[in-house]
Image 1: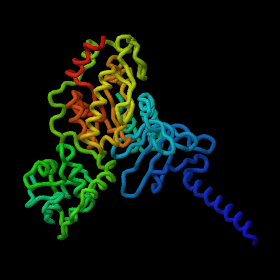
Image 2 (image 1 turned 180 degrees about the horizontal axis):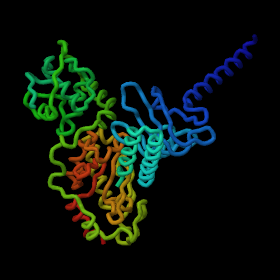
Image 3 (image 1 turned 60 degrees about the vertical axis):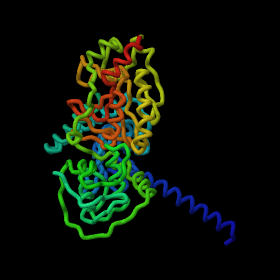
Image 4 (image 1 turned 135 degrees about the vertical axis):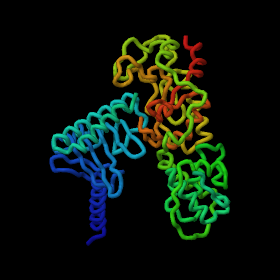
Length: 157
Length: 286
């Protein structure tokens, strides 16, 4: 093989490797008809989206739960757009991260009305989830998420 | 229950193993990230002592002394002794301590402490009621809804400004924004670890308190601000408070601002101009 061809092959293989790495950073999960992107900060958690879907992707209001054995789940309440967290609230033990999201994290310096809107969407998502759980006969979880909905609604005065 | 130690623990302390274990347990109960109570007074333990002291000492020294203020504070939430084998003490440089504090700052400052463990809050300050605000500053606008709307009251409007106060920009009543800038400068000096993590969920927003059609939010006059710590808002009404907020609340109080952790429904992310400070602003709002 001529050295020039070997370099070309190496470049092509390198490009494939980089492309795979980039795809890996955008790992998609969920049912075939409702895929969503794994937020980078939840790399080692198992994720579950319960909410609206559109054209094969998580899209609309819902609840994204991130589990890891032996730890409290982290929960996103709000709106997904094209399979990614868009507007809402992440609840952790320390409190709430709220507002618009980009790449799995809240955007810096957000207007107060955006944060208020995020809590309202989050509350609506928790309430709708509670109703779905209630209809499915899971009354204990339905009550839990109804309580969450109320907590989220009264966060901003 | 008051816990006793035989000798000092921490930076340049005697660091007897039994004493170190006791202090490590107490720090862990306060939510400090000390890891396993192993009797070694390493950088993690000293960093935890220093961060803990930052809540009530102007000059944290990283040292817990028998019968001292730090030990009394640590003992406030009780103590559960646990078995641990004897381990030799370690010596740590100040550079290591700073490195350790910085690495743990995000989680150690958003850890939660019970509001009930904080003692009296907002000493000498009075919160401002809706009626007091209306009487002294007037109605910010004619009509309100549940959404944020702009100030239309001409008298107030000309005193609304947008400015950077250090870690973030806010829009609010001009003298309140200026006061907030001075508070942030003080926090930068006295609590740099907290300052580095501060953000905001906004100041001015004319609207009703959620669920009400009569009570106006105190944010409607631009004299209140909600803070985030490491991008995280403290949960309202759960009786728990992010530790970093407890550290800066006394600085707000010194400047005449009232901390929302003292409200009937705990609202620790919220700080607002207290009545005495508002009275100083009123003559200039014409």
